[in-house]
Length: 303
Length: 258
Image 1 (cartoon, one colour):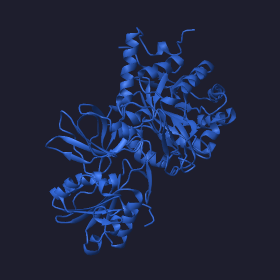
Image 2 (cartoon, rainbow over the protein chains, first blue to last red):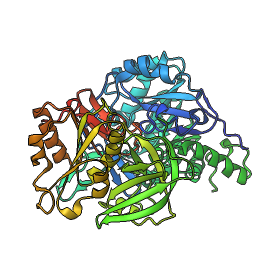
Image 3 (tube, rainbow over the protein chains, first blue to last red):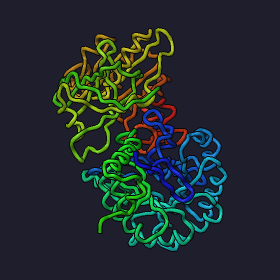
């Protein structure tokens, strides 16, 4: 049994497997399929200061080995989360992490400050990379200045572990990562979805209601591995890797590229019990390869 | 109701029509409890274009034979792959999902079940349930043509069946909402599953006659569990997941113009 314990900033996780925001609800939706406490960290649905209805239907289209979505951060707002959802999830014995999004620096900071008060939420993942909302989201995440400004504003009011989720829709993701590290992030997670588009050729119209959406699934994995590799070389804070992970071997690729932990997203739609299978599979792979811990393979590519 | 991810085995594969396949699935253990109108998400193996699971409504559950039936229309690559399954193959299901149709409200209530195309599928299981629980279901089924009518013998074994076809090759010519039955009989409530234009027109009939009406929707889905928020329908309570809050909705909760 290899040691799967993983540390991200102030977070200690029993294994390096987390769930990607927006693919695992609030965790409870999957309780029939997995023991939630066997997952290292559960990152719940993106939360904003005010309620958001999200974009119109259709919000999803399947692509070759992947999918696009343009949900648009539908959620009932941070007050509803604190009053109604937090009490339901606070006793789940794993790291329950809230993904925080916003459309202004003030929104981000106020939302983060509210979550900071919740005893059983040890970390937030700051979403500066959502491609599906007109204002905010990715608008902050595509420049070093914008990214740094959000992180600074949140860092002032948030004193627990701050993970910043990065967009791959940029010229240099390593530069953005460095900017958020310098602004006070404890870790970065990447990649958020890749912006894409599908057209219905008979109607001559985009399939998705807002024309574009974020691409996820195994088709994006090589892009994600490349981004993690570039970022891990550039920063000295932990990197959380995600993008198309379907099984333990995919996860190992991310560790070798430099990720200390991984998130599983779209794969939850195919197999709602995939998270614990990946955690078990990582352990088996490490045992088979004579590795005593997951941390010893992080970034260990042969030259 | 507890949900499962399970490999079921294919016990029979039938082709009621060139465009449809009926899969009869079974398991060594007794099949989980399900409610009529719920659906399953099946995993389609073997092509990159069928990456996501496919939501399929439960056509029928035969407890004695321990069978769960899926009546599937071959539309795209995924459903064509499902039609290639052979007896003895396994099919991975996440189920049961969604809310299902309403339970019996009172003994002897007359429930009109409108079905169109492959939308007739969940009405077989629901009709059987209603009959067994003291209600009086009546089926009013629509299709393009006589050969598109599915499982007619099975429907007739449960309750009276009225039919419309667009070409007049069986039953009355026209759409279900034009059937003369509607001029002579009154019903306590209506359930409908079929193409959206048909459901909208049934909803109009229901409003006009002050009859409670529920519809079963089939928006494009990913997770099936209410987690990804992709399959939302606009309702009076905002955007809600068809996979979790539905697929069955009271028409008064929808924002359709009827």
